[in-house]
Image 1: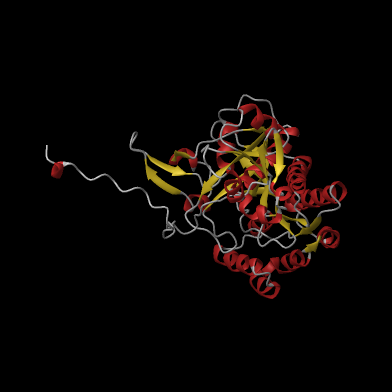
Image 2 (image 1 turned 90 degrees about the vertical axis):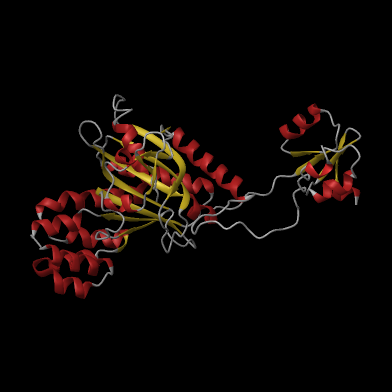
Length: 399
């Protein structure tokens, strides 16, 4: 065979910098040390939840569309990526939220477990598009669900667990904003407001425009104006809220909101607490008290949750309370840990030396070339010390 017929050897990969890989809008690479920092925060949150009896579940990233969205509202469906399963030829969805999956597990696979059922979860979700406050389309959720309990104490437990988890990470200036999203729709039903009028009033309430809401609300004008006034720091808002002459049918909702607020003021007095009884955006499927978590100097929300009906996948729906935390929003509020110190182990260093050093807290970097310039390599790899002559010698001491 002539030399001309032999294909040339492939060129070695270039180590020169190249143009950055283009990722879809809303997706990004997590690099060191951020990726490790987030993983440690997730572990810490789950450990705290486990200490309070919340057992972890791990739903799949992708499900058949009909099961994933069976009990989801339209907003979740609009945020769901869909793809065809080449094996079954059925449509599948990539989860945009893990809460619906945990509810499915609770009401089907774990339907036989005694109630109340406490479950925890952590994992990535993917959404069709981000929002102004949350531009990332892929992010990590961590949360808990308390299934089969419709009570103020259940609501308070879930909120307190979230707050204690965030405090344990070092998040400062935490605040909770309470709402009861079902209150306004129930008032609309009681006063039989037409659909068009409801939309106009709802839009005015979302803008916190008391004059526009009153002008559109007809017989509900005084009540809605009073509810708008009962917005702000919890103690003052509670006084206004409890003074309103609400119809009997919605008084249990108001009472739950007041009871949750009172319990939180007692149990977590160091946390800021506000009330917004007419907020409904993002709480459309909630049936009781809802809440949003914020922190000082952090743009956007750290998480949200509330009471809802889990299922029904099999049997009857179950009253539940849950919270979902958003790690992309939380990480900027968590103090970064100090970098771990790196110890360089020249090529040929006994394995036992590395084990002993790691037990003492070092990160060990093993040399691969017995002919390398050890000092230069250790410095280039950001090592603080070198193992030499049976001792750990800090580079700064050798300077």
